[in-house]
Amino acid sequence: MLYLPGNPHAAMNERYVVEDRARNTFSLSRETLVSSAVLEKECRAIFDTCWIYVGHASELAHPGDFRTRHVAGRPVIFCRDKAGAIHVLLNSCRHRGATVCREREGNARQFMCMYHGWTYETDGMLKAVPGAEAYGPDFDKRKFGLVPVPRLEHYRGFYFACFDRAAVPLVEYLAGAKEYIDLVVDQSPSGRMEIIAGVQEYDIKANWKLLVENSVDDYHLPTVHTTWLNYMKNAGVNVRPPKDEGLLLPSKGWGRDLGNGHLTTDNINFRGRPVARWISIYGEDAKADIEAIRRELVARLGAERAARIADTNRNLVVFPNLAINDGSSVTVRTFFPIAPDRMRVTAWCLGPAEETRAQRARRLDAFLTFYGPGGFATPDDVAALEAVQQGLAAWREVGWSDMSRGMAKSAGEQLNTDEGHVRVFWRRWSELMDRAG
Amino acid sequence: MSDRRNAASATREEVEDFLYREATLLDAWKLDEWLALTTADCGYYVPPNDKPDADHRSTLFTIADNHARLVERIKRLKDPSAHAEYPPSRTRRLIANVRITGSDGDAIEVAANFVVYRFRRDNDRREFVGHYRYKLRRENGALRIAERRAILDGEELGALGAVSFIL
Ligand code: FES
Ligand SMILES: [Fe+2]
View 1 (tube, rainbow over the protein chains, first blue to last red):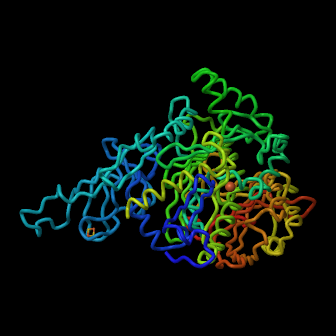
View 2: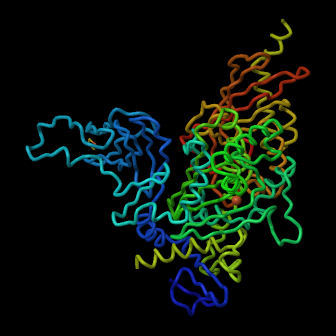
View 3: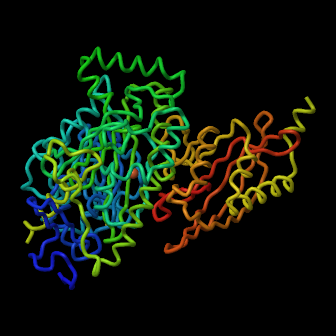
């Protein structure tokens, strides 16, 4: 690393994250956001050692269903075999490498490679090879199945892969994030949440870690999302911060450390929720229905748990790259770096499987008022992240970003508008990068 | 009865003139004038790239505005705090292959192809390619937009990033 005169940390050791708890300073080297050497290292140190989100069980409703996608740079087939078991297979023919399944999604009886026609069962086993007699007697088809990811586990229908065979089990890895996933899944009376059709896939010209920060950073809400707040206000929602509480937002919220680099905001609800808190934006005719959803929650889970679900909003980050925004609707959003200054985002809407047609439409509407590449808020987040990335071009002279907000307070006092939860991500990131040497 | 038929008919020339005028207003960011071309029940849709024929009530769209939300979208776009579009993008729309494809009650169904070029300072040129499906209705004799669907051809939004202006 090159340190230039004027760098406040020039005398310190060569670290990416420099924290001084006595002086309440926390500085992040901007090199972490622009360097291809850093990206190369994090592919091995982060993406090849952590549990990485692949998809949700509901996306594979029937035996033979499949979805192709990219996970940590690898092409994979996320599929359900004929017997009903879920697999994540590396989408690379064992013969000479072609992607075996080239469709986005569908239902397959088998996967046939278009190059020389090797065919595989839906569980990955090699089924047939054209002209098999040309292979000698030692050729063992059982050794040439599609290769599964080294580890595949799920938590309540959310499937994660891990490329490190020695990794701790997913439930252990998820640590405190489990509780926040439960708050999402428990919104369904039967515990069945489903990914709704229609995927949003878009690039942001910014380093992937900037979206981690942005997904949980409520400090930017009043400035970046002014037009969204105005939209809420025009619809009769109270968006003024309460007087004398020193808040930037209409309600109080916290930033929390969930262990293992996972983090969340946990905010008192002001923005409404399909499950289940009515605000004027939903319209008068939705009131009775949302109250009925609330009653179902109370009857099933008790008043306290129902309030925990319906009266708060939570933006969860599962380290390193899964965000579940349980806000105006529920989004499941994952993103991968494709260059130091570019990421590819995939986002879905999640909802209870038993929703009525009207409830589903309301959820989708609520989603679009805020989220996604055509929403009233997300495009401005994208603009902010791209502005950051452009500013970072001066990293050799302006070498450090400040993330000390809230540091003078205790861990339990960190607000959603502080940076305590953002620091959680960076500490874990830095620990894993250091561990890789 | 004959009134109704007349209401749902137009020449291609008239429709083309209308779409070209609309494109000119949008490229000039005359958003209020553009909004005045829509009916009070107008819907504006950009379906998701992977499900271009889907229903916005059961599928997550990129944009699915009813008229009230469309009005709010225009307010937002005129506000300098709409950071994704401030300063406003420069756009140029090429509209082609305009045809009248049918009628739905008193609405004229129209299809057209588009290329929208979008330029921003310190950014690459972005090309939005696809086709429109309109429902046009006459109000006081003039054509108005009752439904506007901009369907992108790309397999994903990808490098286009966002649909932050009126596509
Ligand atoms: S590469 Fe697949 S059959 Fe040859
Ligand atoms: Fe934001």
